Amino acid sequence: MSFDFDTPISRENTGAVKFDGRKQYFGTEDVTPLWVADMDFAVPECVTRALQERINHPVFGYTLYPESLYQSIIDWFERRHHWKIERDWILMAPGVVPSLFAAVKAFANEGEGVIVQPPVYFPFFSAVTTNHRKLILNPLRETHGHYEIDFAHLESCAQQGAKLLMLCTPHNPVGRVWNEKELQEVLRIARQYDLTILSDDIHADLIYSEATHIMLGRLAQPGDKIVTTIAPNKTFNIPGLGLSALVIPNVEQRKAMKAAFETLHVGNTNPLSIVAFEAAYRDGDVWLDALMKYLESTRDLVADFLQKNIPQIKMIKPEATYLLWLDCRELGMTDPQLRDFFIRKCKVGMNPGTVFGEGGSGFMRMNIGTARAAIVESLERICENINHNNFK
Image (cartoon, rainbow, N blue to C red):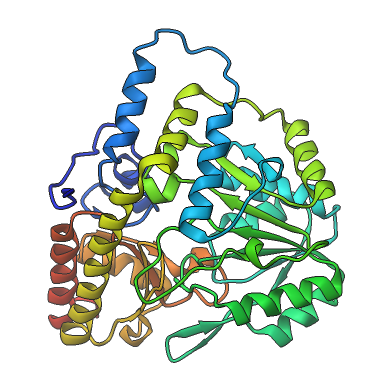
């Protein structure tokens, strides 16, 4: 089967944050939007077909989670990740970000510590601070464009009485796929200091050919306290439907998460979310394989273009996700100047690295989940402005 990822699809005037939110976020609509982490590609036909079939029934009442939904999760993770999940481990959730907030409430009391590893997806911070928990930072260590976990520092963070470690795997925005040795060291520290781990694996399916993602839960031993967030939302471009799941083998941890959600009364969902979720995991393999080939070609094109034409910008080559972490420090601009340069001069809307916390200064995050022509056009505008010293 062939899939068309090159033909642009207009998303303007559909309420899309990425497009219709440009004026609010960038101060202008005259930018190519390469920011919010969703893609501009049509969802797989299996998803639209399933939604159309459900829409043909004219009643959309309160809906149960069918057993076929749970089976689609079990089958997907065994088929794609070699992880055997038991039915009882699965807890449906209203989204990954709500799950981050619920996990903080479930596993740390007010004033207790939660470890976060910046630069990282910004709700990791707000989930902690909004709930009045102590934010403990374990910054990733960057050496010559390669990011690693600082394990000695992580252990010192755990010694401060932390209760929860929020692990982003694969990592957004730096694109690392943590290897087995790294994950085993995370588990060792968690066991030694009785940490619960919230493992955010929402990008687990978006892995490039040179990397292999290992689900942390697959390495777990009895007694380990791991809560894994999963969803087809990023994989199949359905984040607006807002349904996710948690995999929690530990009974007490599962009860704690369920109780946290019940205090917020967020247990219900809508029938269309359920249908799309199940169809994606059941029948989306071929589309995903084609998507990853397309994204990998775009990623490599960006790397080659920057190296040849804009050597002042270094791309941290991602092993996963459709998000590129661009090191712009050699341009010699402050963060406000950098943001202004890309918006006003280049007309390219990206996320400034500073929103991802410590270690983000001088970086920009570029979303390549769009037609390749839009990426090329954006790169050419950036190149033209840099070569004409329009940033000075």
